[in-house]
Every structure is written in C-alpha cells, then in structure tokens.
Image 1 (tube, rainbow, N blue to C red):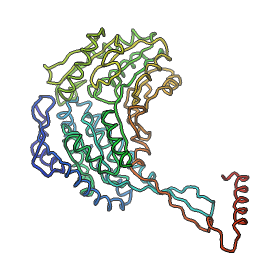
Image 2: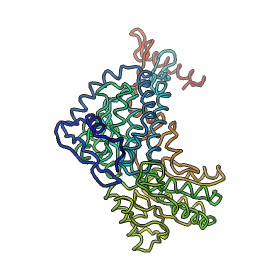
Image 3: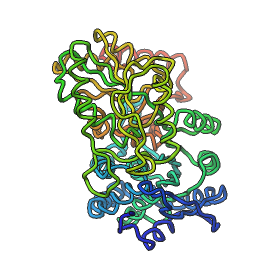
Image 4: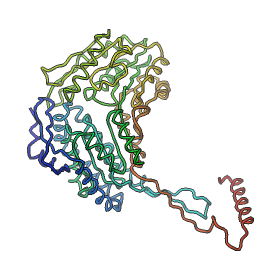
Length: 516
C-alpha cells in the first residue's frame, strides 16, 4: 500500500519540474509492492542542451547576487525540509524501499550540509588578500568565480541526500545546476527541488532531466562546465574521461568495499551494535557501509556471538512507520546480485551464520541481513562490492594483520575502527587507506562532520564533498594583482644593469629580514 501523501496531484506537480519536450514517460516502481508508483517524463539529448542553455542564462544574474542573500534562500529551504519531512519520508520509502528510520536519516543529512554552508559560505567566498610579488608595491587578491553550469548525476540509493549535499554548495557558490537523478527515485529529488523553489530560488537556476544514463548523463557531461557524479567506479571512469577530454573538472564519489576493525580492547557490545547499524543501514545499499569485518582473535568469539544476536533480532517490514530495523532492496536486479554473491560463497565453502535468503513473504525485493565466515578470495563477495545486506567476518591475530587486510583492496572510501584506547585507535585509523575513517562509529559521524572533506582514495573517487573544498570546487580561483609602482620595467632613464642590481639588493634585504 502506497502512502496516502503520494497523490496524483503531487506527482503531476513534481514531474512538471522536469525538462522534457516529448510525451514519452518512464514507469517507476512501488518497491514495497512491486506495482507501478508513477509515470515520469523522459528527457532527450536536445532537452539536456536546452536545460543547460536556460540555466546558463539564469546563472548570469545569480552570480551577481550577494552571497549572504543567496544563503538566506537556503536557510528558508532548511526550514521547509523540516516542515514537510513526513511527505519526504513517504516518497523515499515508496521509491527505495528503505525503512522509515533510514528515510529519516537521509532527509536529515542535507540539513547539516545546508546549515554549514549558510554559515560558512560568505566567508569562504569572500575575496582573500594574498602576499603580492613585492610588499607594499603589489596588492594581490584571490577571488572566487563561479564555474557556470554544474552537471550533477546522482544514484538511487540516497536520492535526496546525495543530490542536495552536492547541489546546495554549487548554487550558493553562484552557479546554476542541471541535475540528473536516477529515474526510479526521481520524485524524492523533485520534491526537494520543489521546496527549494518555494524557498525563493530564482526560476531556471536548477533544472532537472531524466532518462538513461548513457544518453542523458552523457549529454550532461558533454555540455556542463563541471560535473559531480556519484555511482559506480566503472561509470565514474567514463565520466572522468569525457570531462577530461573537454578540460573541465569533475568530482566523483565511487564504490567501496569498506572494512570495519574491532581491536583487542574494543567494547564488544558497542562494537557489535555499531557494526549492525552501519553494515545494514539502508539494507547495505550504502557506499560507505562496511562489508568486511576484521576482529582481533582475543574478542572474536564474544563479538561474533553478540553480533549474531543483534542481527537475528532485526525486524524486517514493509511499512510506513518506524517499526522496521531494515527495509527492502530496491529492485530485482539488486536482489539477484545479492543472491548470486551469497550462493556463490555458499557453494565454495563459506559458512552462512545468519540470513542468506530472500523474503518474498514480506515484499518482492526483501533479503535477510546475512553474516558469512570462511570467505576466501575465489568468492565473488570477497573483493567485489555486493551493495546489499551481506557482511563477511574474519579473525585476525593482531593489528598489523587487520590493517594489511583492510588495505588490501582497490577501493578506499570509508573505514571504521572500534577500540577503547582512543589514541591507539587513532593510530590504527591513520594507517588505513580510506578517505574517511570513523572511530567507534561506522559512517555517520564522518559523513555528518560537514566542516571536514569527505571522499574516496584509490578507485573510490576523485575530489571531496563537504568542508571548504566541497564549496570551492565549484569555483575558479582568480588571481587579481595590482601594481602600485612600476616593478617589471625600469624607467627609460635607468640602465638595466642598475635596475637588476637594485632588485637583487632588495631581494637580499628581504631575505635577511625573513621576507621571502
């Protein structure tokens, strides 16, 4: 049963925000039932070009608006998200199948980002004085110029959070945005777009296109001035290559095969509860969720017993309330991938300690939270991202082994360390090759610390979201240097030899005084 808040009138209002010139539509699925949820417009390549052209016109005026005035619009947007949160929860659950707890967490994530940039953006974007070539003679200023039209491509797993944590700083920085969300989860994103326009965003500044990634996404990459992409490593490489051919920048958050380390001195009960929360958040369809757990042999048996107790006690339901611990996978495709990984591991000798089966009695794409041991390198789930509620647990003899095995991956997005001695845990964290490392938490504190950059190492991406970098990446740094007195060309009456000696004497004086 679809939530009563998702009416035909709401769907029509939201889909009117899509740039699409034809009557072609795509059907989206009510994940809890498997039935049709909505029909949404389908954009063409020409529609993408049109959206970018219209956004470019709107951006010229927006760039002249004071940053403080821009920020006030997003402060109002922040309030509207809080006011209309229940409808957003309903849309997220219907389109993704996630539990209401996960829908609540997703809707909350951009609130942190918006609040941060509303406070910090005016200072970060203000012209900064820099040391000029010659003290007193040259005044140098670093200015931040918007890039223009930003193309943002977001996936289905966190359609609201990922869209708005990226597009909010892009807009505050003075750009326009053309957004391509995943078609299946378009309504959740469009609801946020609608609220942002209600908050006072100038019309035409944020455009939305929908359609197949290889067609619509490619057209966006080929015409935007900068690209933000969240998705698979394979597609990320293609996006980076196309952007590179055009000499435009890109920011990519890609896949992960994230490790969680339980040290010998860890509080085992808290580690077990924390592992359940992070491993099965959003049914494991979270690029930052751990799929590999390395436990020190001193606490392995105790941890595993407590972990299994927690997992076996999880409640799975298809409901629009806060009763479920875990929701559904999003599609038959995801269900097939998870089932294939588990069956492959089982057939090659892995032990299934919990879960390991689909639950069509609850909903068409439900799968139990699954815990494996005895997983070996020849199994699909050993090194490949499953992107589902499947976690493998390994015994390690010491920290060195845990660190080496955690780093033995082509990915480097997120990692977690659980230990009582915080100084020691921080030392272990510093040795992990991941863009974000959380101590005594799985992923939330790292993602939610908006003042710090977050992104991937190795095959997990390029660039960062959050922090100053998450805003300034959408700008060009411009050096404006003013010469107060002639320096580079001597007066005609001064022989160049004397001019050169004079400059050398000046450099020596600066050196002696500590000015370099």
